[in-house]
Image (cartoon, rainbow, N blue to C red; front, side, top):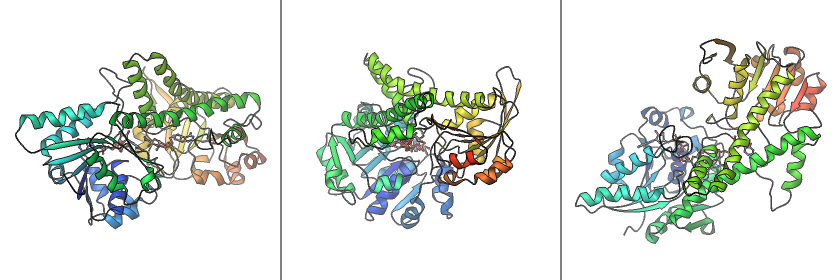
Length: 471
Ligand SMILES: NC(=O)C1=CN([C@@H]2O[C@H](COP(=O)(O)OP(=O)(O)OC[C@H]3O[C@@H](n4cnc5c(N)ncnc54)[C@H](O)[C@@H]3O)[C@@H](O)[C@H]2O)C=CC1
Ligand SMILES: O=C(O)[C@H]1O[C@H](OP(=O)(O)OP(=O)(O)OC[C@H]2O[C@@H](n3ccc(=O)[nH]c3=O)[C@H](O)[C@@H]2O)[C@H](O)[C@@H](O)[C@@H]1O
């Protein structure tokens, strides 16, 4: 049995694999960490001499990569050799929702997981600990075990595998802080020696009492459940935001009042345009699929409502904008502030901005989109080209363009729409903006972060999500 881990290979150099391995390398200088990926462009960016070109933007990440890369942190597309060298292999590949076939639209697509397991089975040498870092449907470890052992059975060699579940709980935009100061590290498995070796890695910087161990299934299911509970809070407060608008209440006051009850807590009660990000919707859909698979239809329906409410929140915002702008926004200019799914990230996966902008484009509006971190190319990938072609091949007059600043986006605009809670949107110069916007001008603040009272004092009409008093 191994005494300690000397060499880690991580399969997947994405939003999880990259930052997670960077922190492990930073905290464990005596461990060689090789991060491998099939995406050459992504690896090239991880190896770029200009650290501002790292493929993942996370506060604090570039400094860590600068310290460790080349010392005990390496990024490569050379997969076989790095698997062979590793005592411990983290699988951090993507597990998106299946787009077709059985379970399409709900189940996880595990083809990248399976490909990784086959690569490990084929190229691993000796005793190897395989760690599930990706979020996986409960019982996936069995599938991985079958794949790993099938290969071993067919060839006489000394390969031996242990599988652990070690789901990642980092949030984008705070990944480094979440990795360095985790609320908990969760490890699931049956092989106590393997569990102890992974615990020893984390003990380099995590207090022992924050390291939880359990069985494989509880660990896998805990990750899906954690995301479901977090998303549920957002849909709950967002449902109340609509009621506040109708009753003259203020959702932020309500959120504070209930959050001060320590049994509810203040976190994750910020109302907004709905949860985005690559995982909440995906993981809840997966939970719904698994509940249905076991015939637990009521439980499936329960969790599905979290997603339904999220979709409804985005739709109702689009509808309110059209209604407030006199029932039509055709040809009207709307300055969209923020496209990322949250502040401090360049990630637009499942961003509410995508659906809301699509709705506004279908109504014929002329969107000028500004985001401090998201590139024009990314927005083009999400929204398609700047002219929307509908199913009858007619050209909607709806179009969008990228703006390099708030002022450029707001110039001549009928409305400003705040979709992402970027810090800079909290201190906009409303006197200046009121002069360059077209009257009557509107501010739609879906994040309740802008100084709406000041904007109102300069004659701008206000709609603030969940603020029944102001709207
Ligand atoms: N993004 C996030 O904030 C979090 C994501 N997760 C989970 O972590 C997993 C990964 O998510 P992300 O890092 O966001 O995905 P990602 O898409 O950013 O990165 C996955 C990477 O794996 C690579 N890959 C796929 N198959 C491969 C193979 N056979 N060999 C080598 N490389 C391969 C892809 O090229 C890609 O670069 C998912 O299961 C996700 O649910 C968990 C916590 C947080
Ligand atoms: O599995 C994952 O991918 C991760 O998903 C989320 O992290 P992330 O999606 O990166 O970001 P969050 O901060 O959770 O925000 C998700 C969405 O909810 C929204 N949100 C968040 C909090 C809130 O109070 N209100 C609210 O609308 C955000 O704007 C964003 O659109 C979880 O917070 C992580 O613990 C988890 O590891």
